[in-house]
Image (cartoon, rainbow, N blue to C red; front, top):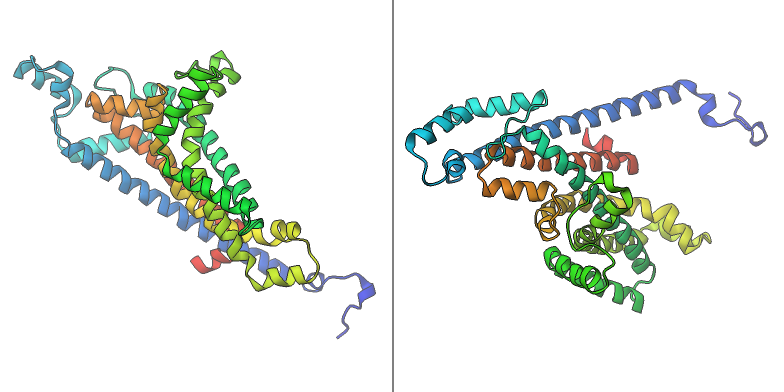
Length: 346
C-alpha cells in the first residue's frame, strides 16, 4: 500500500471517497432525526398549551353574554346571545371547533367587537412582532458586548462596574423603567413620543421611533441577565485545556476569544435566551399599555376586561406559539454550534 507523501498534495479524504460519502449521509440522517424529534415536540407542546388555555378560560368566572349585554339584560336576552355565540354547546365541541378552525386559518368571531378575531390580531401582530424583534436584538447585542468585555477584563474595574450595572438592570421592573424613559426622553428632552403608534404607513422612521423606548424598557432586564450569563460562560470556557493550549501556542487573547471561546460559550447563552424570550413577550402586556401601543398585549388585556374569551384564547395561544417556535429555533442552533448534541439526543 502506497501512502501519499507530503508533496502529493492529496488529502486523506480523497483517498477514501466511500468513507466521505458515508459520513455525509450519516450526518444528514442524524440531522433529519434530530429535526423530526424537535418538530414533534413543538407540535405536542402546542396541543398541550391549547388545552391548558381553553381549560383556564372555561373555569374563569363570568358569563361573556352577560358582560356584553350588561347587568340590566333579561334572562331571555342572555340565553339568546349565549346560543348565538355558541356558548351553550359542550366544552369538548367548542374546543374542537376552535382548533379545527385554526387549522384552516379561522379564529372565530369576537364576542365584543363582532368582527373576525384575525382582523384584530393581524393589526396588533404587526406591532408586537417588530417590537419583540427589536427588543431581543437589543438584548443579545447588549449581552455580547457587555459580557465579552467584562470577561476579557475579569476582576478589573471595568468588569466590576459592568456587572454592577447589570445587577441594577435586573432589579428594575420593566414597567417602572418604561415610566422613567417616558419622563426623561419624552417629557424632559422631547426626543421621542410619550406613547401611541403612528402606523407603518406613516413611515418606518416614525414607527421605529415610537417603538424604541418600549423596546429599551423590555430589553434592559433580558439583556442584563444575558450579559451575566455570557460573562460566566466565557470565563468557564477560558479555563478549558484547549484554550490554554491555544494561548501557549502564541494565539492572541482576541483571536482565542473569537476562534475558540465564543462558539462554545454561546450554548448556555442560547438556552437562557429562549427562556427569557417568554418573559419578554409577557412584559409586552404591561409595557404596551404603559406606552398605549395597540399591540397584542393591549389587545389581550382589553379582551380580558370584556370577557371576550375567543380573543383571549387566540392571542394567548399565538404568544405561546411564538415562545415555542423560538425555543425550537434555539434547539436547531444548538445542533449548528455543537454537532455532538445531535448524536447525544438520538
